[in-house]
Image 1: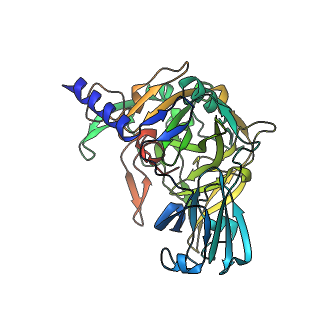
Image 2 (image 1 turned 180 degrees about the vertical axis):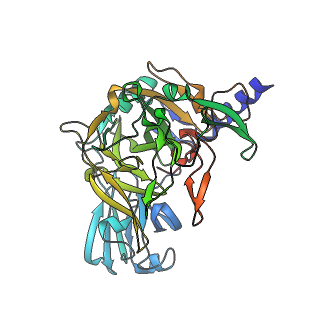
Image 3 (image 1 turned 60 degrees about the vertical axis):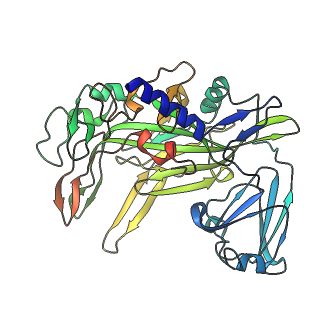
Length: 411
């Protein structure tokens, strides 16, 4: 019975995201409508929306749909360019974009658009890579092509490891609160701030777990995951907060897929850097790369491992009397293409591609006693001060993050 259910889930997954590669190498999603541009009233492609084709759209069109001075994000299919004007009648300051924009705040144009002109353009530029189709061989090549260099901080103490290395110090058990199997330390923690020797990681064993994921609107996301046995939170007024056993962090590169003049291409458009409960999504042109390559450069925050696009001190929460900050620096270069494992993930189903071997750690069989997966990768929360956990509950694995299972989301 279990085998039949697994097969049914696999079939359902494939139906939800059917990819059709036709004889002329065009790339079509079964759930994708024809469109040139979709405009949204909110960032992150949320809020009121309107699909637009080639043409000119003055303030009256915007007012009757998402509103005047309300445009915050937009999707742009390859082969189109969009000129946004601050004033009606296609006048005033303007910008022209040729790809998806996650948040117009980054262009200093958020909630400032009163008219729009959409026209066709050649989508092929020097960032595009010609491919022969969406095959395992192609996707392995692309995962290596865009694999990031992640700078571990110069004062890092809690280094990455492989999952296999860390699990020798962990026990899988049934968590009654989660109604699922989870992982916790085999050795009992004597306090919420206890530090076991394996928490400091094992860089020599570390691996980068990479996934390609088919997304809406002819996009493919390449998602690169770092596992660390421990996350050190922050110290506020002399007290540690937000520590947790196990830490999964990632960087995602989004590729647009299109066919032009009979040739299929992928084009990098966006890069996602999540940190804690936040995320920075930058356009490809804004992101640093290893010289002469497509290897994105990311910075893993000291001891807490949030991913950032630049070095330095980053404030992500300001409470007035204290700030929560991540500090990033160029300590150890973690070149993920040298330690890459390559997979495809499609909702509940994942598989290895290339030379990698699929591991049960990334499955969703959380109620299966014989599985290796964990709904949570760390001990339950313990210790509290001012309503904040000192030791927070362990995180979900990659398969539990929207970056892999959500049809739209990057992080």
